[in-house]
Amino acid sequence: MKRPVEQLGSLVYFAGEKEDAPFREGSAILPPAKFPIVRRLRHLRTFLRHLWRAQTWYNIHSPFVFDFASQVLEDDRWFYAFDEVEHWRRQLLRDRTLLTIDDHGAGSQLRASRERSIASLARHSACQPFQGRWLFRIVNRYKPSTMLELGTSLGISTAYQALAAPRARFLTVEGCGASAQVARNTLRHFSLKNVELVEGRFEERLPVVLADLGKLDYLYVDGNHRYEPTVSYFEQCLQAAHDDSVFIFDDIHWSEEMEQAWEHIRRHPAVRLSIDLYFIGLVFFKDEFPVKQDFTLIPWRWKPWAVGWW
Ligand SMILES: C[S@@+](CC[C@H](N)C(=O)[O-])C[C@H]1O[C@@H](n2cnc3c(N)ncnc32)[C@H](O)[C@@H]1O
Image (cartoon, rainbow, N blue to C red; front, side, top):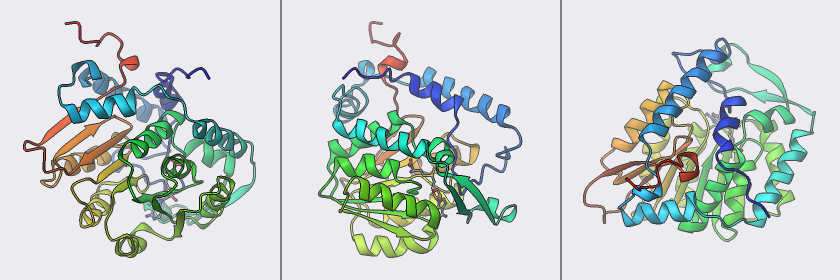
């Protein structure tokens, strides 16, 4: 099958902005609903800054990061799972069923509950296809045996990650009961028996799931995009991290608060290496990296003039 043009991913992102719905907090600096144009311009500015700074695999000298770039960003293999998840996403995009959304985030002071269609959640809350493929390839490359996701929503990112690791123990936490119900259908649709969906607020569930998992090989945080909660989830999960763990944070440039949270995380003394892919950020804890290193990467197709000839 022909591979879709990956660079369109970023354009799709700016055209149909992803949100942290239904726990849509937004940053204290830019209220979420009021100034969508200002927010999009801010995203465009931060993306252009990323584009300017980012290295492609042609400029990387670290063997570990080069391996990451070749296996995750530049891997051309097309897995069946990609089509299957996108087929399921299309079904959800056609589903006009209204869900009553529980809102536990900062937005709850304004709206205690609200109605959203499954189609709207599939359009605005789920990861973009290219991000799903990155997650799949990360899991496929590092082969974690214990995995945790914070923010299941309808289960699209869950499916991408779980299909790459059918034998891993995978816990995913979602606070909105109605979304969790749809996510259960997603798990059933893909016969994902190794995934346990834990319903409840991260704040309450995280200590319990961490105690249950014991060690954490893989973490993906995609919910409650604010500074303090994100840093708190990171610090709690750190207790279960080890030399080979990989932690991923979504939407690290979504707001100024998230940029501050990402700064805090990547500067943490336990983090030995960080990779900023703009849409997600990854941190590694390997002792074999004697000097702390931070990388800003981009697929070369998004920056075709940076092919390392000069
Ligand atoms: C952006 S969506 C997740 C999208 C999903 N990872 C995907 O790509 O398909 C964020 C989810 O996190 C959940 N969430 C946000 N804050 C939460 C909290 N404090 N406790 C539990 N769930 C929360 C929301 O209900 C929402 O469904």
